[in-house]
Image (cartoon, helix red, strand yellow):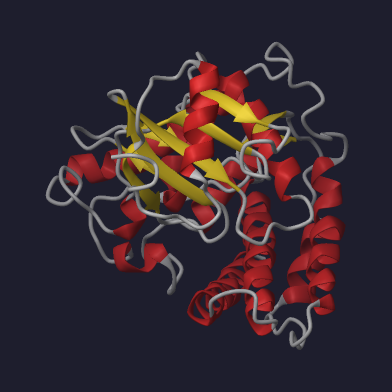
Length: 348
């Protein structure tokens, strides 16, 4: 079909995308099988094929935030650097960092043949307990590969501010939470244990930490798994990636991991009572084995993940109150925020 006949996706001029791809020498002819990918709550993802190759286009939301374009530029830079490393990430193809194609920054990557299990288990993970166990092991292997990656050799020495990274987190995200009060209609945060958790984090920063690449938002909803066998096909949604402390990714995974102590709301809720998933102790041991990093302070990283993720999700709730986000999504994310802080309080 021609670009004119393809489904219309707000914010994505398919004709402009096709012309850009012509300039890049990426196939020829129409964009086929055009569809908007679901799963995220902010950025727009569009899948399509051209000349037998499958692509995914990523752009900021229709109403970009102040830093949306800069965030996409960072993502594109990181994914380009990760090409040909052992990190399971989508293969980067090209970016329009000057906003010329769509009026915002956008980039192209190869489509991944994988499934997001946060929406529900499918085969081989549905009926095979061994495959289900491999979900957690493969996830840990993915962030372990990232932690082992030499970011300086990849040209990413300036990709973050690792100095006093852990010490800066409470102030950084408390300031973010306070900024939500600028949104009209948001009454301010109603989050249990907020001061208790932030105070504990400030008083219990590990005396030593490591520096390396971290994904920053590592949980099941940002992972694609193989449809043919139990394997991690790709880690996606890299907008919070930085150079910091890689153990944050393990803490994030543990904070959101299904099981008897899993969150009572959100994607993992449906998996809490299923057998076969790797236990938190197994995930920690696997990470230590694969990275050689000291995991003695892992409770700090889990609490930090609950604190940071809860504040990030509260941002969508605040935008809901201001009429800028879907009420159903905002209410769900606020409920997850409350559950995250409850979980953090149990670890103090």
